[in-house]
Length: 251
Ligand SMILES: Cc1cc2nc3c(=O)[nH]c(=O)nc-3n(C[C@H](O)[C@H](O)[C@H](O)COP(=O)(O)O)c2cc1C
Image 1 (cartoon, rainbow, N blue to C red):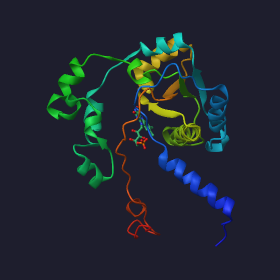
Image 2 (cartoon, rainbow, N blue to C red):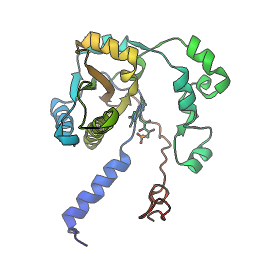
Image 3 (cartoon, rainbow, N blue to C red):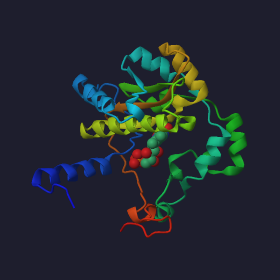
Image 4 (cartoon, helix red, strand yellow):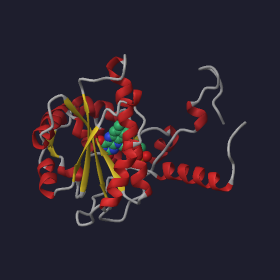
């Protein structure tokens, strides 16, 4: 077996894994008066630049929003919760810490309003729940990165451009890990990709029609001390299959 186990490689390996293990979604409000230093922002964008993409397509553009007035305009865009979201979100919820620790997948239901946890209410909630301004998720962030891609292109022969879309996830992870290593907190905002929100974001930021908004990434420093999230993961043996789907997982 080849591989370098010298002291400096061992340190890099340990710290890379530690960085990945400690990366987390920070949903607390950010301090609007605590800006992201330009040199840190550039490092995060450099991390995006290094991302792997199919055929090195580099199929992404990133809008860096750090102007207070533009952030305010984006914050006023309203998104609506759909019944589909409520139903599919419900499938990922656990209703106690014990249940979540047992399942090792999903999130705690208490992270959502109680009406999101009652399937008998979903149609009514989707119909009557007031629209939510994006400001509630931007929540004080001094910088929002918006990742967009050209919907007219795709990775060669990739049905539904699955491979192209995967690479937008690589961009996300590279930037997230870089931010984490700089002590900057991150939250992904999927609502930026919502059809109605996408249209408004395009209008405000003059993004051409053929470019699709995939997600927003808010960066910042928490305004309050962080509550410890209960974060669970399956064990490696639970998702690996040695040599055959029926093969034993790697311990
Ligand atoms: C593609 C993608 C979309 C996500 N969308 C959101 C989102 O809209 N809001 C949010 O708070 N977290 C979002 N997340 C974060 C996940 O909920 C989170 O990664 C997961 O619960 C694991 O928690 P951790 O990031 O703290 O490890 C998203 C993550 C990914 C990869």
